[in-house]
Length: 473
Image (spheres, rainbow, N blue to C red):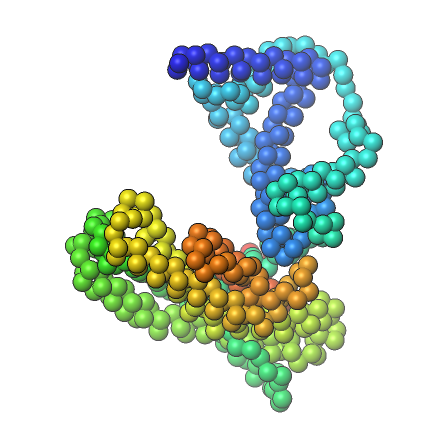
């Protein structure tokens, strides 16, 4: 049977080589090679486009032409990425059980034909279609309905140019995020942002002086802070693992202590390790707080200056920022107050997952089933609390639903209280959406603040680990 499979795969590869020969003899080996290599580039561009659509659909928007989006993403590929794709093509080998030859073998086979092209044309492939643009739009809508459901409407489709512009803007904001906050805008430790009241009598000179001081703290303290953050991340990861071990042991299951970083497979050992890690996290708070307060303070003072409106009146882009600021600040403040719930949700999700993985083999253990049910109920209550807690906070970015809130975005739909699978899946989605949105909000705020600093004559700080001179380029 195995030999038959090998022979079958060999014959399938020969069919591909035969088809390639027709193409190579028609258009020439050079065109065959360039087309073959370009398909690899477009394949990666297609994957990027699907990721873009997944992101934009969270806001109820889809590209009106998937082929156009693929083409737009292809045009953004830099020379280094294209070089790496070409290297991958040249390095891939054909396997014994592969149904298709590796691209490099197909290219080599085409060149062995050694025959000149019999057909040449400089026209684009779209010339083969009467109305490619409309056809692409129709096929895109069919593709969305096939994968997302028949409820997709024409109104859900937006121009590729609009989506690409938004992606580019978001990319710039994420670059600014790292540079402005010097690595402090981390989902492990979100910056505490308070809702800002309208200023009464504010001294712009004093605000600027504070702003400069905070920039200096960030510039000189980044390396030390990064070391503390790495230690914090390590302790936080260990804490999740310990919580999982504690839950398994409490459910009456045996574990390998070394896999969970414990000295012994014992509940009391796990509890002691949990307490130690919580103390460790608490100890790291103080040395990290000064740097984080400087980062939050820098943002606060920059936005206060923006709020005064003197610069706003002279610059259209700052005027746009001024209009967006209230929603963004309100959303960032909601994250600040809701982070403890997000952390609990994350830990709850991690523990429920590892208990659920044991049910198939140990479903007869009453302790395990009872604890799993308890955690599932807790996860459900936390999802409801997250949705309700953010239900009156407006979603801060453009959305197809004008009434979208932070709660409806983070928790799209609450399942039945006894639907454990849906609850678990929703928790994962809620965590992903929440953390991604937090980073996007802080990126937009950082972009605003850095733009205002620039108008005040303050140069951007260097990205952590970057030569300061490059930040000014």
